[in-house]
Image (cartoon, rainbow, N blue to C red; front, side):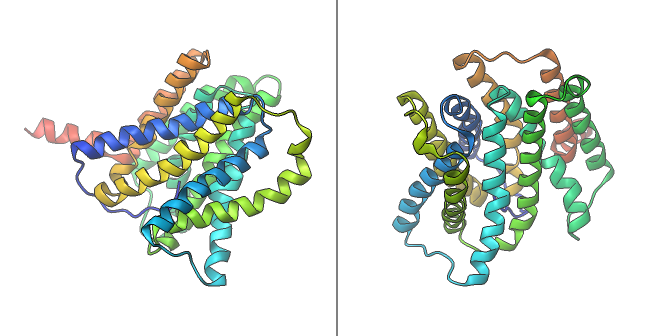
Length: 309
């Protein structure tokens, strides 16, 4: 995720196709991660994700003839942005998926807009809370309570901590979406590459000190291909599709991908990983979706126009 603007443009058929493809790519990140973490430690996996994505984006940026930021101040801001948008959430999601199914991680990660609405109300002057948004936030977090409430009432074990880790990752994504507004005049592709460079440099000493990957068994080809998938497809290529939709259809239309990512992740996890979610997880996902629809406002406007006709 990265910074977006608030423009609203129309969606063509090709834009909808790209949006669906993006949802599969980003939903696939949970699928690929679910495979990789079975053999690769979480911090090492997160490091591999940004390293591989950085290599993809480097080729793209060079081919486009773009340049990276040149000032220390810019790189300092990008470093903070990288922590919130890559290092913290990627690490939390990789660790979280060592304990919970990929589909559940994706549902919990879909709460990002709920956190963003609350944070934006208190930290910005042009994105205030409305009654509809407040209702959406309340309904969305009721969905979270439905999913993890029974677990919180029991033993406070790694399963519960993993769910909280995925929620914390969504919170960091929300913080980064607001902080990233300062980069709205930067080239999106260059900004994405700069993030990956900084994130890679941050991860190197952490991984070397905490996980010492050279001491672990060599992962299988399946795990390595999954790590390549999350780096190339779900990060590098997904960023490029993201920027294309953003330019053609606007940030408001692009936000629709939030509704689709959990669906892709659940289907992939069910079909290929044999994951099974409890009924309360689907009930919670439904409540979160209702909350997001209330925040987005388009379903209500569509119904109002239909009734008017």
